[in-house]
Image (cartoon, rainbow, N blue to C red; front, side, top):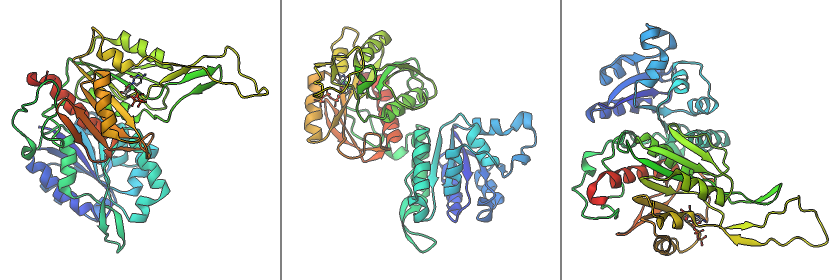
Length: 423
Ligand code: CTP
């Protein structure tokens, strides 16, 4: 049985946590509940204990036997930590790494994925401080759901309502890689890594669905030096690629992440190789083979400059840069004798997204292309609306946080690598 640790924060939406607990139990998910001081003003430990069929924890000091049931253990015996409702205060503490009560101590001590369902007044949700905290948490790998929009208990209207318990349960099931019964379909008729029929269902991937598989991921930008102090780069933050590497590792894969210069922490369980230029990246990819699958998310610089040995000085006229083309790592890999069974490329486009991506898939010899429109705030931003282009056609996913895109793609990869008809 999958188990979650549910942290119930203080807010009027705490009453919905009772319904969430009931739905989780009905779905066969085991729960332990931690109720914050604030949360206890809205729901009682007794209600949550009855619904969860388990003891409810409220303070750091009611963990009777520190050796057996200390806060470290409580934070680690679950498969997933869920914070619902996640108040502005709780999100701020999580983002800052504060640990001044049982809930925040558990959140800091856990080594498990964390999913937060925010609920707060619309102004609080839109406040720059909360935006900053949410962005920080997402960058740290926490899944922060978007709150619902609508009339609020405080009389205002807008985003900030706790997502419906059904929606939180769906996100929990997705994070636990549990396939919802209504989404399970018969075997796909497609072959050779073709498109499956259902986009949202992801797959029957288990948390060990990629055990024994080696997957290569490239991520981030490349830096192409001009002289010892200057370089050509692009706006890639590496977040989508890092999220994919983390999601693949979470499914049990051995992941080698070849990364351009970024400021992100290495996801748990991932082996990271840092590179700077496209040529370094091509060499690191070649050295990491063989692999069962490769996901090329890096925004590789298409050109490199002839590098001046000394810093270029201001002269009468600006210097001209002599550019030459970089190796196309994806195309080389797709045509190499050591080609992984599944090669996935990304396509960053600013117009005619699907047409360009479809052409790119054929030109580069990739099995799948994940196409995204980068004309908005995608590069460096927290969300991504992608189209999955396969041999069978195009599947458009709704705009999702980058870690949701990652989980969905990782589940599809697990499905493709472990289902013989798709291999
Ligand atoms: N890619 C690569 N090596 C390169 C350029 C791109 O491996 N030298 C990979 C990227 O990691 C991505 C895919 O190719 O998976 C498409 O990258 P994109 O920048 O969209 O395509 P380009 O080949 O650069 O085409 P264009 O810039 O003309 O759209």
